[in-house]
Length: 145
Image (cartoon, rainbow, N blue to C red; front, side):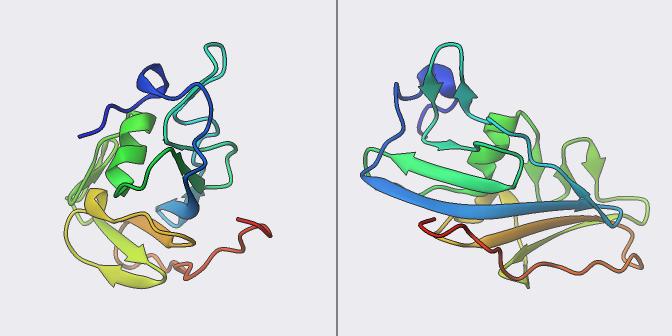
């Protein structure tokens, strides 16, 4: 496993392997903002290979070499637990469930293992199954992303 976090990170963003994925987190039918600057230590000017710049949910993978990146690595940067039955302190129990979607299609297994690829839309949806949620199937990336 690669070391993660800006302390173990790069002095600048890598450019050899560069792409973006997008994450939506929806809890009880409402969006939860993905924080800006996950994996970034602005004071030390250090970057993790996997990070965010803003609260749009765009995940930046900017590395010096090609590697496999998974959603769980972003959640490590966020310091939020993610597994098949839990996101943060929200557990799939008591009538609540956690579902993961890739490009609008439900996927099974541990969402932490979802591979990050160019322009992949990932949605984590937590709540009662009777809450109607429009699961995003794509994201309008900026030109050049």
